[in-house]
Image 1: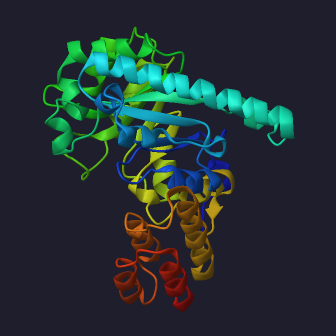
Image 2: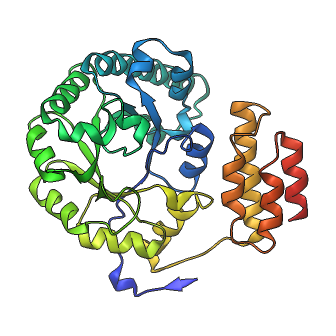
Length: 341
């Protein structure tokens, strides 16, 4: 447990967001993070082209449940016509979900008024991914260099949805920095921008440009500004918020194996202290996440192995435990190994 002075607490508590991570922020993980205090969760990156061409595999990434709302579906691609159709598809599915939620409310009275008010879906456009296979398509961070195309893509989305639209960008790429990029599209009706405070050249390492994010917040006071990057502890979170004056922060790799980081940050910002789960609590959290995976994705845990490895990293005997977990395929195998921890 760590402490700081209560007089330094931040109030009101800002948005805490689960940032999009390809192959990681699937429905089971989003539900877990939501339960630990994430205010908004982002989907994995969804190909606008995949939705345009009616890819069934891509459509599975749109799976959602009322419990995880509000959620933002992140689209990536490089062609405005792909984004236009993708925006229509996500919007239509969102309307159907909200209709279903309200019908269930009428039948069972199972959702509170607050829950109903939070049934919000939004659309996010990826301008920040630095991964080569995305860049080769002219998508992700590569789009930031093409101001004209970026503007057309944002217009294609905002003109084809009634949902709130957000942008995910980096501090810059080449001669285009985040300020120049946002100035080029500031008149368009997007509401939120998540700024990863590293440049394309930095990738996922190096310092975060907190001063730049603060500059963006000052320059665009009517937009919601979310700071992203290098947040691995409640202390990191507090420092980021204090130095950027952002409306919220987005957590990414800091949540891997530690989805309780959301709860810890809220505790720290509220009271100046936070608790860390012990081994038995971690085991219960792992079982809970595993049960979600089984219920939603069935009894195939190959893609779930990475989560298991992250959960047990750093615990006593972790190397031996993880060497077993990277081989599991079925639910019973996981439960048996956890018993031995």
